[in-house]
Length: 326
Image (cartoon, rainbow, N blue to C red; front, side):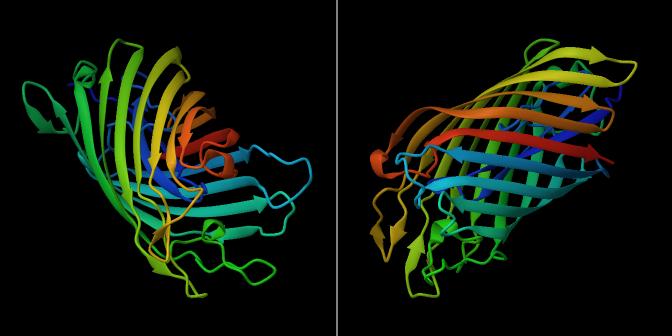
């Protein structure tokens, strides 16, 4: 069996109606073998005994609907720092530390700081005349098999949920934390269709819990369901310099539940949307960098005319990732 030298890439993408949090997606690729998209989670785990260090930027620029500078949402900037470790070839664990900056157009309510940290575990397996856990070494032929992961995680409420504006009011959408843990589960499937082309699918669900804010308001963010598909196409391979460049095309579907305030469904929250993401990923030795633009192509928001600053109302999202395996 030929051992494949792997370069790991990792991505974290943001959330729902107020676009105020991040969830994790992960993937591995080598100079040959399956590709890894920017947003859709791939199915290859970390090599045993290896660490991953990574950084991701997700910048969201929102559409404006009034000519004056008022309290419309201007932009959100999500930085996410992470470290992962391969316990076994089939089992990886991760720690993510987000840093968020949220700005209104008139700067009447801006917030910035570290958000809730997230822990995640990933179990990898494949199908080769039956299901089996990911082995320590795989040949190029083995990497052509269907690969899968099951993953789950939870956040710890380390971010400040009670951020106040200049008048002392609390807006949960501008907070840096949820006040309570969140839980998430997901699954991926990856198939290398040809020597250059890889198909990836990913689905996950995230659950939020009710929290009483410092002003006495009870608030619960709507649950999230995602389904993503992607194609990664290897357009360049330089074996001498150990360099690879992939084209990544993705479709990201998001269904947001309605938020609740004091037990009642909150207007101007929730809905469905479909994004297209168009980007490239570069691999060099044991580092990787990805860059892409994510654009909403279809939305069905619950009160669409009132949901400025929500998911689906972006002009664009700029996605950048950088990672290193050691």
